[in-house]
Image (cartoon, rainbow, N blue to C red; front, top):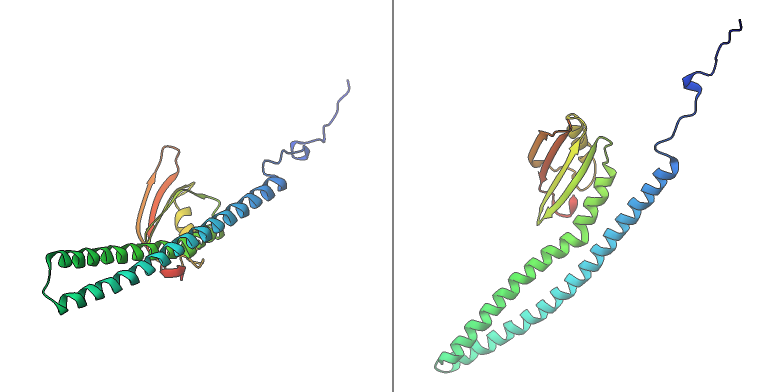
Length: 198
């Protein structure tokens, strides 16, 4: 009768690498390309908004000059109904112009700085147990929606966010956390960042 001993144990067997170096490098390249694409879009959008703002500024200057001329005409002679209506119309157009210009300035500031900074800083504050499903920028408000594999991962991730420039010194005004069917934690966070992400 022959007996044998197998020294080839399970821990010596080759293992399949689920996450390979090439996969990590590919994801890094894709992430960098995505960030560059976002930055290019923001710069292009900023130039468009800037051009529109310059046109509106020129229109506003013309309207102010027109209103001044009409007002001088009114003071030099008896008011006429048609002239009064023309002045009122010009003043309303000027007011609408100022409102639109203010909105364009807000969009320009957000597109040229805040959104690319937000995306880059979120990438810097990556947490392996936290993933975002939605990022919403509504005027000055920023909302982050996502999930985490454990409840304690959310405050850890928020602590990491406080170390990046965009969220430095920012307190989250609202937070909703709940458990889903997969035994994971869903969350929605709302913050009001300082101008320029400082």
